[in-house]
Length: 283
Image 1: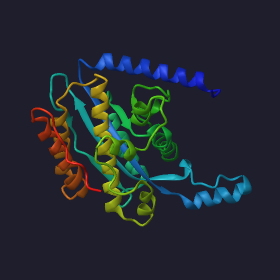
Image 2: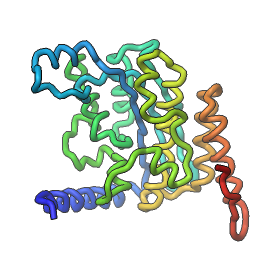
Image 3: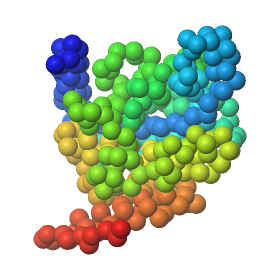
Image 4: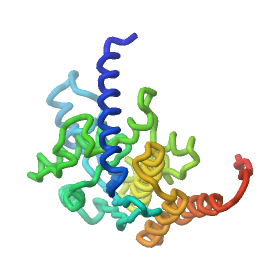
């Protein structure tokens, strides 16, 4: 047994308590979530300076303090009691092709402030994204929105689905759980995104960050539904999400060829009666 087991048990208990409290307060009213994702460039110049200064003591890998936001994407979903389908805001994608890091982060902070009651939903955000966002705020003299200003690790202003889905099991990657659940995910392998950013392949970067927000939104809908925090027509909601994303990003190949087809199939499947048999996937 590891020495940190009691602390882990305390953390899980606190997570569960806050999750139940949040659920009881929101299931009978409206609940808003903002699902967000970010991609990064590496600040090699400052990391090189750090390695020179520290010499043999320097950390060899380029860790999060040297990660600069190169793309940001988010979408607002509002679940209203009695409504079968959520209200879906226009999905947003920003990249360093046309905006600075400070401008992208300021726009995201404004989106969070515009929805004061919204819960920020991420996949693994607590392990890097939120740290980077707070660092940008310090460097650029920006004021953090309430969702990020709350430093409590169990804050009900945020939901990190990476931890919420794994509970006490080992955490997994987004495409790992998405594939296991039959949900479309990343159009490019995870490790390719850094080189794509450095190459200035902004269309591919845009596709990747948008796809991550879509996949995370689907898992959020499933997680909140399974926990009883929302009551919706899930197939219709997924179809509505696909339509909203398709209208905003008509040229997105991931949306057209993967997510929209998948959402339509789930919606059609829900209308069938009896057992549904799926053909085995081609190798």
